[in-house]
Image (tube, rainbow, N blue to C red):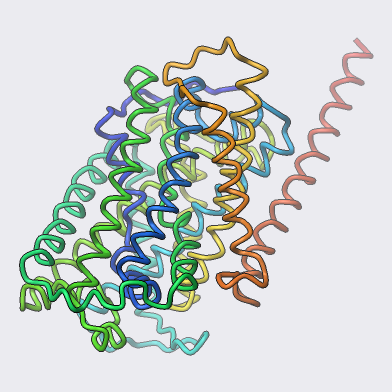
Length: 464
């Protein structure tokens, strides 16, 4: 089923920066104040280590499968090989939900961060949503960003990967400057209380982890475009997860030690304000914001790449309209998928600032559902295809697979009503319900169309 139109143009450096840049994004700038105020530094570190453990175990299953089956579509291909089209569709649609949530999140985050650096008296009031006034000029910042990034991806994978490499390196470097400032100039008394609001606070941070770490699974989506031995695909996938866990914990330390509890309660962008405090200069605060802009672009860019490949992989299997399977003859990119994702990013700012948390939380449950199905498929393929060549082979595969499944189920439960970290009614649950309703309609529409086509083909063959 795999269409061999994609070119092998990505190096292992490209792969590492693509995955790491996807996981760092903008969340470490805009959400860090919430982490520290609710969980404290120690609670935040515990949440990221526990959540990171989940991601590592799931990442190991992806690493083995991506090296063994390096085809466009990643999790979709793995589940189809292990089970059936229905389960494959659910896995792909769920992970795509996570990708779309990141794309829309970044489209809303861009005007938010630009406002911090260059306060603008926005014009063209349109409406208010959840207490936030939405202006035309504010929304256009995110919409123009969507146009530019979509255009970059439209014209080939190489320009997009070059931009990804440069900006990801900048994000990591500037983040390390914040951490160095924390060790050199931070006030250790700011670390109290170490656990913030206790385990409730830890749980609140914990449910954000799947959203923040979604990105390593972009690697399996583009595995057919990597010009390196398959075993390196698995290795670099795990390396990118570990790098991201360390980065997030260090950022939590820098923000905790750089802001007093009183400052933490009033800050709009905690990471930037902590940087400004630690170096006693607003210039350094703006440098962090610039890194945040770079993070927005790296994350956004990665999920346009990954999301368009999922859409392509689903379309060539007639799960969604064939329109998404179009590959540009000159640029070798799935341009229709890129245009679709660009449109979602274009319109997302119309929901305003409140949409940031909606997308973080709602998209997280889709990501974990996708991970759960892939983890189950990993176990199934180990039993049904023991002779499958696995260039990156996990030694303790049963333990890894079971832990990945159990932790995925536990994370899904965290989103359920009655839990301290449950999704908020109505908006977050409406986003989840709306996404899966669209998926159900597309699936049954596609199934009906495929059945009709098969019946026509059978009749034609019978006549012959």
